[in-house]
Image (tube, rainbow, N blue to C red; front, top):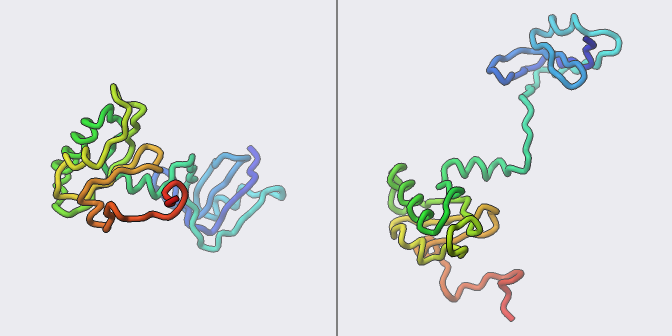
Length: 175
């Protein structure tokens, strides 16, 4: 097996939780991790050697358009991806509040509803629908695409939105 690349003198963090200082690669596959001394023994005149000078190497992160920060935030939000109706959305939110002991005044976020997956009426949930969840928590629920959201009355009040609020830009411009 031909070693094509080695990284030495680093902090290599592996997928199995081990830390080492060097790694050997053959074509595009990691074939050995260990000390810099062990890995340097595999080097020949065709091997590319990179001295990491103490820098870290992490396992590869492949983002297939997951919006990593949004995904992380979603882990603490109501998962609405399996909702088949507005009634499901209401139920999921009420269960989340109870299970997580959400305190009055604490914002509740949810994501994943898709009216196209609803059984029966394919309509967006409304502010009035979300008000049925309760009046103790501001609530913002994002559609699966993340481009559309619905808020309850207390959320709109919390951020100062009224019937007279004007949002400039695009489809919201006044004629």
